[in-house]
Length: 337
Image 1 (cartoon, rainbow, N blue to C red):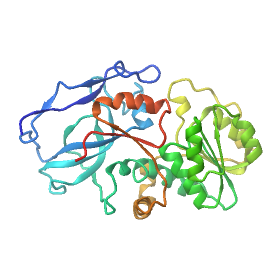
Image 2: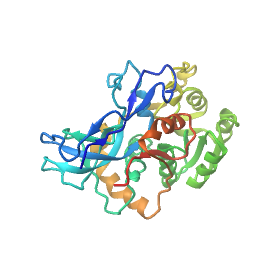
Image 3: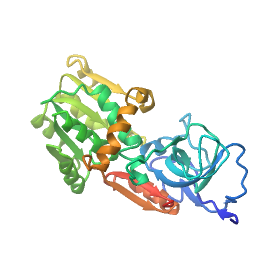
Image 4: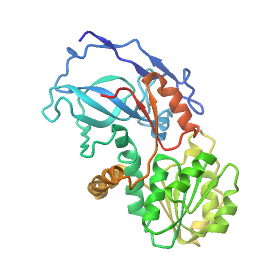
């Protein structure tokens, strides 16, 4: 095979707010690669098939982050690629590997952190970046570890139409809870109802505090947002409520306001837990891998995907994702195989 263009999405500058396609990031086609002859030096040559769009990518655009993206280098996200050539006995040609991929069409990988994806149900590879991938693990691990859910209790899930929140809603319903869920459009609210939410509302057109006062008190709050949503929950939380802090997207743009009623955690004896998926993996990964792909294959789990095709469209899709325009898991498909 002759050398081919190895397209990339590069970080051009650190954003001051949300990233701007063409300004913060740029599509670059100046690099080439010879797939047949590029030295592997004991590694593997991967063709990137799918990349995940998620807040983690944006968080690493902050110049103060220790693992920040580097100016002039490709963005990175979790993805899946196929092995084209291998000098590593652990990986064979045709294996599909999950790991942290640069926004690049081909790469030589030497890191042992990439793992094989075992697809016994012949699911689309995109599923392993969504409900059977990191977002699914986030929902499953965090809920199992910290919810201490009891039948008849009340759960509230923000960003319920996203890849994580949509799974959390279903986990809460499986535990017999009443579920309140919020999202930012009427289309998303309809999706919340399809997921099984008992009370679903558009936080942009409905006063959250009034809904929570009416439908609460809240026993378990899955927080994807922070800010005013967290304040509203602290006012209506039950005694011994559990708050699971998965994300605080309201703060990612740099405009976060202090929480004014955090003192409520004392008299209400509220537990607040943040978590990192990797630290819970040893406890829950095996069960997750046994249950979740099978439930997706049997359609027991509802999930949606928003698929953007072509790396050249990735930065615009990422901008739309951060603005909350999508329902479900957002991915970029670079190639089918």
